[in-house]
Image 1: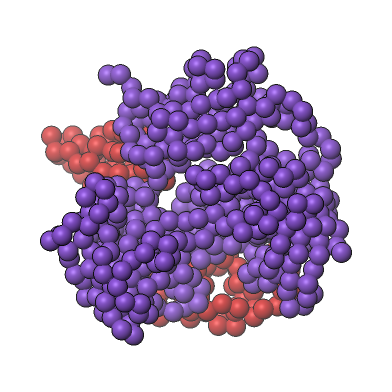
Image 2: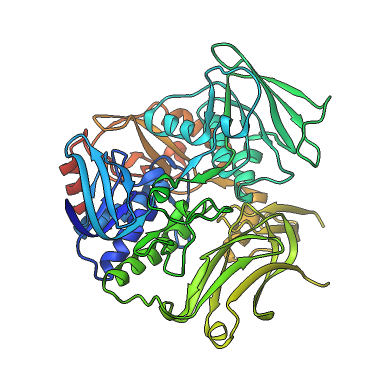
Length: 421
Length: 135
């Protein structure tokens, strides 16, 4: 049995930031466990720029952003294991992992930080009809093939889903000489950042079909054609609106799901909306001493927010092993209502939190000219104006806690309220 | 007055800009809706000489992976992106490479270099990888 103060599962942006911050806050023996051949996670294949504007105040590519953290981690002498797969995390914080050099490893940690990230939804998850030829890939898989392994994945491409990875890949494949015939989006709005619609689709004259989905895939060995159709308000395809594209590839960018197989083995309570663990102000899960951060908790659209959140998990874990965390103090629940789908963190223990807390949330639809209203016990404690909110863009509110502490109520609610003209 | 509506792409905020031509000469525009000064620059540039940063990959040998990510050191005119890609696709490099290392100098006379956007150590030597990060 190996013994560590903190074991971090996952060496992507979340795991790196959490491990570094835990060290800065006094944790000594830290181990980062990564299943890939190098640290950095998905950032290594995200070769486009736009990372780091909040954290570093400059525009970096994914690999550059990762490299800054890897450098810092290595220079701090934080241990890590590559090509190592974690099989199980137990409630008493024993990690079972394996790799080809050490065989099976048992690691007892005083605190565990879960930073496994997320997975892409696949064809099976959205049940697309048609034959099952080669050439149907998730956008992230295609990104890895093109940007790291050096394989071109097709010549004529249709993309389903207008999430950021789908948009980024539309541009990337066009630059590499493929023809992207269409991007189809089920919803009436894109799930990606507006800037990506402009610089990935409009710049290259790639048509975006909103309210459309794939209704057929043809081809025996390889994709030969993909048919899309318009959908009604109940998202059912409308007969007679079909458009057929002769193509060899269909990319799917249809959402990400936090990867919580390990969290389940540890008996951690998951949130049905986010798909990730229920966490408190220190990013601690329902199991004491097990923390979680990044896309394993809820899917973020900017890595900068992942870094910020993960720093909190790193500090939380470091404070926990020092025995500085208070369990028995006033705890308030945080709930999203009326247009707010979810809020992270789910609970705030007031004694552990200093003066304020960062609340991250997503809305359920596009709203214009609204206020995000934070209430406790019916009393409004904060209002933030927004000219435009969308499900694809995470909202963040910094809430100062003095008013929460002085109120007897134990639930904070956040809602979308239309601004009166 | 002639006005164009556009979404600023300088950062992920995505400000909605209204750019209005105010005078006869090229640079006389007013930009509204921007939350920072970079949005104002972007609005005028989109009307006069739109530019983009370009990120792509080049072939790398002797490295644990097959492609090295590269980017332009600054923005280049939008209409030159295709030509730039053709040049970049002809380049092959050999590991080790440091982040920021110039791969193509002054591409298409734009004054902008193509630079490596990660450090790539030589084939699967983990110790080298650690040393390169400590250097």
